Length: 574
Image (cartoon, rainbow, N blue to C red):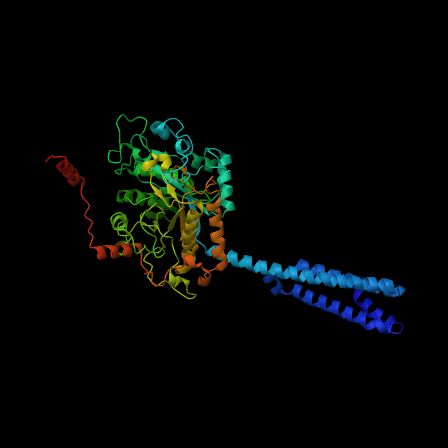
């Protein structure tokens, strides 16, 4: 046997070559030691738990065994030169063993890091991109704006730069695409997967309109059901609003000039609808709710409303009932609201009076959307979302609260709802393509590097907060929503462009990896993302209430009748 051969060489060479025998024996003992250690480690369950590679140890063992076999065969001829070659091979094998051991240790280290990252990934919120499904031929768009109208027409006709002198982004890699193209949707799928975007939030347009009821801008979504692309998770964002012509200047059928105060309705929502009309809506939604990629929370399809409208509540209640009849546990309803993100945003101390009043006048509180403590047990909504609107009073970067940076912490506030508020992050905003340059609304604009820096900071604080600052909970109800994947008419596009390239997408991948790697070690949070020790732990609602108390401001909304009366007085009427 290979083991008896080793001992035979000792006996046969004892008398003839005692001088070098001990050297040979020392090499042999060393090699045996290597075999024993590696064999024991290979057989140890702990080695596999630690990410060790059994194949690497087998290679090392076989290498050493071959040396012993060569020693056993060389002793028969007593060939000193052959023996020297065997010893040289043993030395090389020992070197290989060292290199293999180093490689195994590195693999083990990487394995542990990957396991940690994988664990942390499961704790991260899902980062989703709001998706505008408009870029295709649509009958209603054709009627309102002209044949084959999309935002591409507006973008191609827009100036090279906005009124502040910054370039208006144009698409590069995907071009001016048609969403009916399967190839385009596969490209979007690959971009999302390559950059760790967890899914899309599709705008869903369904009108209870007598002249044009049903879905609009929906053909790409129906195509997705047919061909399976983009193959990414998603849920719908219903826009229960009416379409008016101020969105994009003057519609082609108008014969009178219009402005924001004299808008023409292009498509309306009629709220006195029948159960049959709501059933038609649900039957259309159901084909998506049952799709394997549709995002659900506790067996409830997630359904976001772009903005709160009390008149939509009866419709949402009926949709939820129909979902239960359809085999689901209900609908997971999220109410979008215009506000600041809770706890991760503190307004600047030098906020102007104009911005303070804008905040106090326009911000939608939890009471506004019927999700405050008074409605805790009666609200139809499961969750609220700080919708990523371009709000002028949200100008600073988000930060991680100081209390959350401590190694051991719990939220110093009572979570008022079963599910945390969804955090929204905006890329940038400039609707110059849809307006004359001097009338455009512009938000978070500047040199590309600065725009991306702010986006990255906001995204980091949002992901870290949802991962580490809230009480432990299942990850399926935590989302970060980015506005937007492809809203090119408002310069909110993460798709590759001539201004930003793919850097918005790269930031998503990098931020998620960064949070996953550091875990919830607050000491590793970058200094620019750390909230100050003096920052109050306030919700958006509490910040608004604080402003109202300090300024004594009172909001008394006027009725339309009162506004008309004052307008007549100004014109010299009654």
